[in-house]
Amino acid sequence: MDLAKLSRISMKHLITLHVMLDTLSVTASAERLCLSPSSVSKTLSQLRLSLDDELFYRHGNKLVATPLARRLGPSVHQIINDMNQLVTQEAFNPADYKGRFSLAMRESTFELLAAKFMAHMLTLAPNIRLDIFAKESIGFDGLVKGSLDFIVLPHDRSQPPISRQELVWETLINDEMVCLMNPEHPLASQAQISIDDYLSFSHISISDSDLNVPFFEMQLAQQSRNRAVPISVSDFGSAALLCHHSELLFTSSRRWAETAFQAKGLVTKAMPLDYGKVAYSLVWHKQSMNDPALRWLYEQLLEFTQAEFK
Image (cartoon, rainbow, N blue to C red; front, side, top):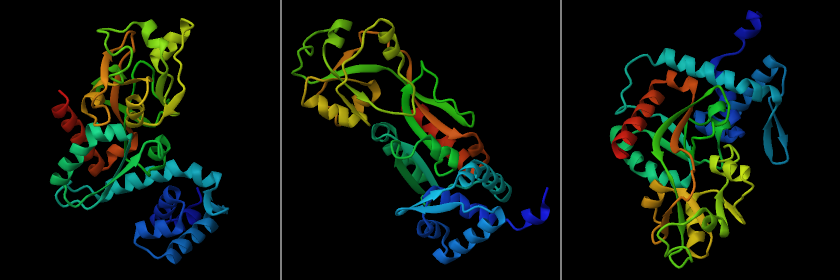
């Protein structure tokens, strides 16, 4: 162990690297750290010398992290979490807390869950800052890098989630899937639809490269049957709007369909096949629970969803 070399690297250097990996911008990092851009640049230069690596380089108009910087990201995130736990041993008081929480979710999840929850949070902790990101723009890598605290998303429980050992999944809300259609759709007048009815029309699908193929899609493939999917969108709301103006079918979360403005006026039919189990889950990095503030937010999410979705 080279203690002399380690002594030249401080928490200031690690925190700067942590924020830079998130923002990839000296200016944005300086703003978040309440420092001048020149101070951030100076700290980065010191760290470059200590690690003998460029850490970030310019490609066109963007900064790109080097392989070493990306590899150090999760370890630096854990070190900062551990140090934060040491210096915040006092009881957490949400009324006085002035920190920042970051969550990512789909727009449909925000409509179902987050709007009421955020209002609830601000009554308990009026000085916090809540950053809500679109799941499509920042996904599971954000949890690993430490730029994101939690993700809330609907998914198929019949297929295991992505296999990343450092991430923890917990079900918040159990749900089921339904088939949505325009009230003028040829199937709208039928009390029930069959599997042949379901497959005879084209569908809108929801794209998410982070998740596995849904259980029912695999079942259909095993029977040499497939849905015709001419359109794929990133969120439920966009799919519902397409339903209003076409004969496309949309397989949706029942809880969302019963809540969302975009789904108002659409006809809901029970699924004619076994879709498997679906849920809205909370995902976080396992080190997050070392932070009293994040542990408090986690507890609030669980209590709120248990009371709201009995």
